[in-house]
Image 1: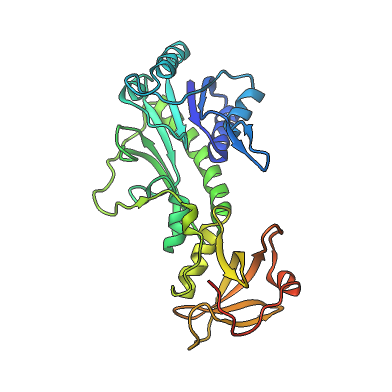
Image 2: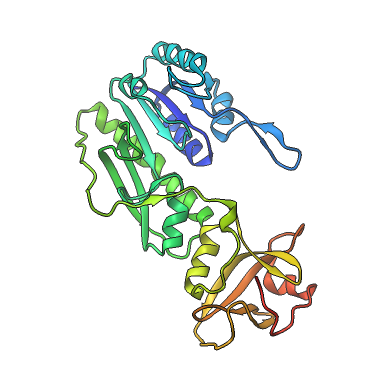
Length: 316
């Protein structure tokens, strides 16, 4: 089968590697334009572009696919490239551009999307983060037949996995591997005519809105369990932050302590070898991994050894 692949970040690179490993022909790869990154803000190729170039595949970096949009020349070039590629199917994973109807209709078997949730829960941009933040017991991957809506197409294959105590970084890696395996399975079934599309249920629809930097500051009035989930959900981006002694402190990990407190939310209850114990709106949160401005992520005890924190100080 000839597969055009459209994707940008590491999640998508894992799927592209799986397609390559299973012998699919890749005549064309679509990915986002190079972006400034790192301290020097130098232009950096996406993980998908890097993988494609390593294997000698043609790469198209487009600003739009809309023939009647802001960049019609990009879209026209894309149309020529896609027609020349003669794809049996297009696989899309975290690409970053909306596919207009002409793209959806072009491959013989249509466009298959690898979505990191159990649809229809967590349609949208940040399904991994939002599932952890909400306290979901499980996540998963849905291979979906794309249509013109936002993650509204028919489901082809899905598989769940338990979230446990994963951070977004950890769950991302598990879901990326699962997505690569499932899309290979879906394409094999499509090739044999065995796929059975299922409409998404009308009930249980939620939207995973994009993660913003403005969400990073911790609201200590929330329950300890909710804050602990946000620490995991915002690792590695944007990281949860709080103010302490005039300094912004990143809080990477913590656990709920089974003890009540009547202290105001944000009050430091203890700062010792176990970590930084803080009163919340409901219960106590023990911060176990911290990062000072300009420093590294370290066990809380190591950070506190060089940072005088007194019981009774108030964070935030």
